[in-house]
Image (spheres, helix red, strand yellow):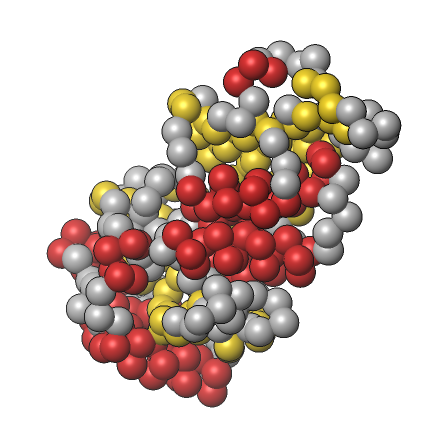
Length: 301
């Protein structure tokens, strides 16, 4: 049954470390690594522009702002998100898309991947495309890879929790595990860092550091190991920016656990477990790990 609109929620995702794995097929490309999905995330509403009438004819849905069908807004402002447009094209859905989030943009929270995956889930529901979750994750993952805006956020956000990306790629190619834990997560952002620029450069040293971190976490899949490996990765990959490094040191000095903070990849953002940043005198945003992963949260006939 076709619907006028549908809404999906996709958790934010902070990556602690990763290695890049290009491939000729976008579905097979991706990253290995680990991070946290967040209860703060992205809500994507898809409002269909064309509704099949069942006799081969089409009509424009009589809905508010129907004349703006095909547009995209981010927190109310008209913009363009390439992977979202690619997802709609892949699903052959003409729609207006509304993306809303409290997460900082371009700061390592996987907003682009969340928007693409949310658009896939909501468009599938609104237009009754009959695609499975794995199909929709692949569509969103391919859009991110082809645009150069991400390598592993989509598959992690689809799963939720504290995912470990053992093998790169979309479902059917990649492989996931997870740390069986739940955590309070604090974060402070100092600015943006271009994912496209980093991924377009030489990623050999970065990937070597990421593989080392993954081996360490696989041998000891605990939150404390994730944070230690993430901190060491940022240093070895030469991605640690001064403001983030200072915040990580402040957390270490303020608490008993010197490995409770790390840098979000890729963004000038520090994230910490528990009350690490608060204890260090910062005024962080507070979230928790999201146990459920991406899901459709609202549909309308």
